[in-house]
Amino acid sequence: MRRPEDGSRETPERLRLSPEEGVPGDKWGRDPERMIDAQICVMQRDVAELIANGQPLTLFGDSLFVELDLSAANLPPGSRLRVGDATVEVTPMPHDGCSKFKKRFGADALFFVNAKATRHLNLRGTYWKVIEAGEVRVGSPIVVMARP
Image (tube, rainbow, N blue to C red; front, side):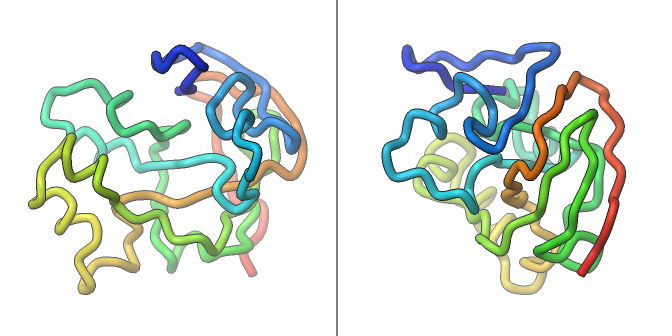
């Protein structure tokens, strides 16, 4: 998913991730104060579907929804993955639910993703940065290349 200038949310079937743009055409690439550690927002698809409760996943604003365990035990910061033809790295920046998340999904959902007892599961997701450009398609395989 990407967020163009007009505020809409697009869900292309494929795109080319790059270190310079992250997700081409997304809001991150237009930010004059880009935070490289927040280049790509990623969330587990099953967790997102549970929280969305039938609403479109584009409401989250995340770039990628994956079928992958995003927990700190499985993918600690510094882990490298091959996503389609691109190489990405899990960053140390925490991906916490915010006021927009609370407004969209409610206080209980925000508590659920940020609960201290389960915070290590990264239920709100993680951030990745692009190391090597490459094409990604819906359904592209994700392979863990290395963990620190």
